[in-house]
Length: 251
Ligand code: PGA
Image (cartoon, protein in one colour):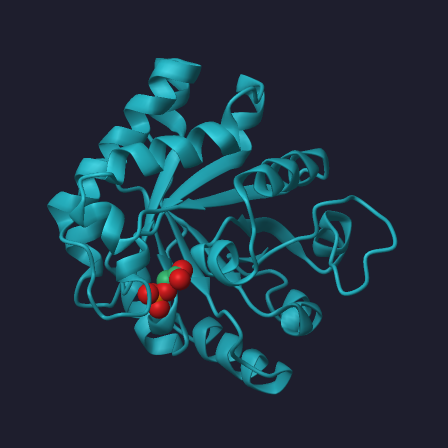
C-alpha cells in the first residue's frame, strides 16, 4: 500500500511573512489527515521560519531545487546539506520550469539525484512531455528518456527515497488539467518501466504523483486513479483553504 503524498509547490511566490501566515492558516484547520504525507515547497527564504512553525505538526518541507555539488564555490547555489539544515526532508528535482528556463539537462539532474541521495533527502523527480510531444504521439518516448537518464543505474535500495511526479508541461499553470485517463495511462507506463528496470516490488512501492493545474474540483478524480499516489500542486497551493480542500479529497 503506497502512502499518498500531497505537495504544494509555491514557486517564486510568498514573502517570509505571507508564508508564515499561510502556514498558521493551514495548521489552524481542525484536522489534517495523518493518512498522507503533506509537504510544502516554499521559496528558500521562507524555509527557516516555516521549519519553526511546523514543529510538532504533520507538515513537512521540500526544497524546490538544489545545487548539483555537495559543497563548493558556487555562488547562488543551495546545497543538499543546507536544505536539510533548513528543515527539508524532500527536494523537488527536474521541474519542467527548471529544465526549460534554467537549462537543466538530464545529465545535470542525474548528478543532483545522486547528491540528494547522499544527503538522505527524499526526491520528487519531475518528468513530463510538451504539447508538441503529445500531439505527435511521443509522450511515452519522452517519459522513457527522462526516466532512463535520471534513474538508470541507481541501486534498488535508493528507490525507496524517490517519488516521481508526472507533470505534462501543457498542463502546468494553464488551467488545462490532464484528463484522468491520460494521467492513468502515463502513470501505468511509468510503473511498468520501474518494474522492468527494478522489479515488481519496487514498482509496487514507488509513489507517482500527478501535477498540472490540480484544483479542489479536479483532485478527487485524479487521486482516485489506481496509479496516482499523490498530487503536486502549484497555483492552488497558494491559498491554505484550497490546499486544505485538496488534502481532504484523499479522505
Ligand atoms: P500548477 O503547477 O498546479 O500551477 O499547474 C504545478 C507545478 O508546476 O508543479
